[in-house]
Length: 497
Image 1 (cartoon, rainbow, N blue to C red):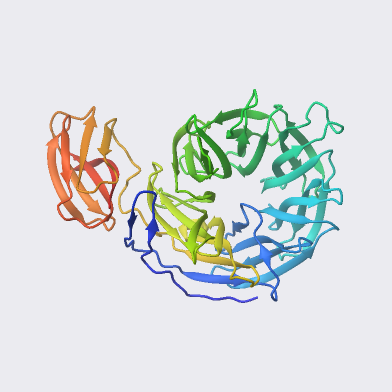
Image 2: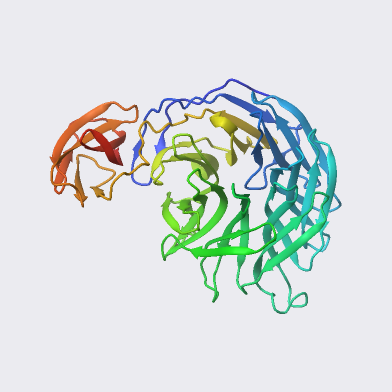
């Protein structure tokens, strides 16, 4: 095991976008520290979508799977990235994969995943650890069919909530055969089943993420083909209470031709929900996937969605809310190196309206798998895997500051009903700005760069239009600030290429 600290990324990277290429600088992009975890040359993999969880002292715990799939790993760091303990745990005979890790109310930890039997069937599998990382108990939940824990969360009362999917053969269940069924299980603190629910819709439904809300209820997210069965997925979102009562269910697509897959969900400070994953846009002959992020209100109704990417298999796997109201997401794309496509980690910052603010590639030959928001706005710890040709796969942890790629203005606060359109955006030499429902009196329009420096200032009638000319401005990200009586009342992002 080794630890490398106090490193930093370059402050400027080439960002390969779908239509253009540009490079710009953002203050506060320095990496605080890096920790690399290996085990004497053995490959250790982050096999799930939520492999890290933040701790109150600023450290994290990380759950992983050995490449041999006969052991799992739990490791803990302090706030400086030092590894305090490192616990390999052999698992029962057969393959075992760790998919998620959570804190428990007694100060310990629990890993959820899948244990494969000799006949190839998977069982929900849970390992419980005490605060010092020593194993307390493990449990494989016997159940007909094939099951896989995709996520779990430690409830405030000490119980554990597990979500995933369950499949059956015709012999095991003639009613549920040939479909994937969402499954929710609640265990007590000793691993005994309190209740076990199959959400039977007769279609392909799977839950991939779960959280406990501030009000004590739970949100689970995943995907569904709906009823009657359809060929493409939709976002599947449910709220339920501690007794397993379903309070509401929502199923939706961002657009009719988009098939989304959800990897992670979080509760936001305003009570809404944010989800990330991937979307396949049809028609799609090459089966490419694009990055997907969306927000709903507290009742699961879609507020906005952003689907973006290029001609690769691209996905976001985890997301966290930032102090400036933006969202920081991590995932994977591919980059071309020496004539071949190699996986690359991907970091994206979005403002509160879902607009992409900045992005960063970390490859080749690495992949980001999780993000942990440290309490009290002390930054973020990103987790991933890296490898080099025939060398073993290592786990890395990167600490980023809370002001990473900070949005310098309140771009997510809109104080009026104006409908503002900017076209084209990105722009090259000019863009037309139009406002609907604007005031009759003149308003101010300020164009600022990402450092908050004023690049242009204009005054025009609020019910009219303005042609914004480039006038030699360098390429990069800018913000349009609309001011009424000296107060910023509306904003839009503008990209110059």
